[in-house]
Length: 337
Image (cartoon, rainbow, N blue to C red; front, side):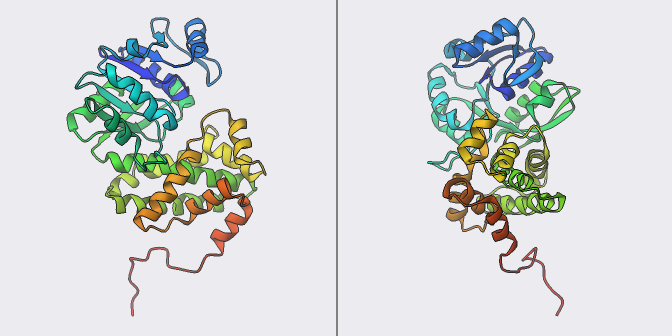
């Protein structure tokens, strides 16, 4: 049995806390919000973000960060990406050398263009940093539906430890050393999912969605490979797998926000309506900046940025994508003379 703390009591953190408890681990859940912790203590349920998922009475809930962090074998960092650095900075004084921090949020820091594991490693150099991602909506994990994800770390022993921590008969965990590829796939797919949602909001069909998914993974792959990630990662669970579920699922907050934008809402109106952090909005500018930095053509991500931040209509953005100059699907393939 391990001692684990889930730092962040949103839908994903809550669902993962239940997985950990099911596996027999001693679980503490932390949130900065006193009302949220009071609700979890009294109701043993996150009635706002994960209704219907009951949490065991022997879980510990706290707003005291030191109490959550100290003495734990694993720290599951589940706060939204925009708060990762500030929370990591606050955690740092209490983290002992060798404690494992598992980043389960998805995003790229806009100012630095660092992945979340890089942000954590910068703020807490004493820790062993891992990531876990894949096609996994909190609503389905909380309900115990079969789910498969990937645990990634630079050290094999760390990745295997995270794998053992979470894996059970309905939550299968693979391992990978390609942390960069996993994080890029997990972050950038949220931006593509916004585009997929916009297409749904405009009333477009399956053909459009299929095109966005396949051309989207092509864009993500071009950038990720240029940055040093591996092709296998982009073709796996944290690449195409995560992209499919985020573009298609009714649980996807990014798709939902995109739908509202496609129906005429502004970015802020869409985020207010979703009532949860829409990670793709925060990753979109960083994705465009990375594309420029590495000289990679990413037209879908470019158009999403135009819609989000420059007032372009979603319909106009789709037409721009459809009317681009003709080209081969795969430029590396050779023709017969």
